[in-house]
Length: 365
Image (cartoon, rainbow, N blue to C red; front, side, top):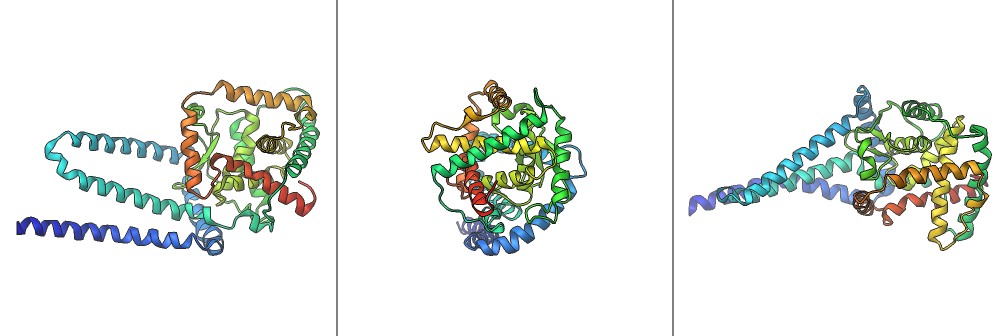
């Protein structure tokens, strides 16, 4: 009995020592989240940019997505551990070790959470683009949204005929990605939100299943890469590229990444990039109007070519619809809610409020 008691005491002492450090780090990170000014100044504008540059520098040497390979290894390893745990449940001699296995698994998840927060997650608590541009994030009315929608309609009707009198051009995804990188590079130093060096933007290895998961692009917070799905309409790609690079620069919240993507794309000399951004923002504004109970989205005012482009995009995604994507949408929505985006997937739409604030400040979009 004394021997067993000693073993138990040693076990608990060892476990306590193993848990102490990660718990202390989590407490410190949790306290930091209450100080957005500190995070903005020292983390998002300092530590994070240093970390992300190193990650992009390392992964940028490879033509394929290192992050996608890491994801595959992680999920295979996780699946193996889950299967092993289940098997142990049915083996009498192995059941005694299940508690220790469970503790090790929880501690691994805790360390994963810590790495996520240090490499990326703290950006969810920053002051963000509204603070940097001195924009007042105020409540807006249905009239404000309708006015912005009309502004976007005018932009679309002006730009679309200048691109083509018929179908839109279909540039290679590689050229769109490269142009997006060069665009950020050309704006570097001119704006606080375009300090992008050491590009690491890759085509997703999972593009063929993107419609099942419901993504057009994504950012890997552990590797620093941004990925673009190649299973999307070409006209959507420029905005997605600008959005994902914004994530690489520390704009974690989806409405902020949308807004930075919009600001950058509309400064391009390439009308195709401008059109892509205005088209996406029009869709967000139209959805916002519908959510506010307004049926008039001013779609009838759109140029016939713009209407055709919107129909083509809608048709493309409608043909890819399935029963699996909504499940992943719910999971991602809950992830966003857990990271201070209370509206979940509807947080993407908050870019409309930022655009309204921009117009109120400078008199135009």
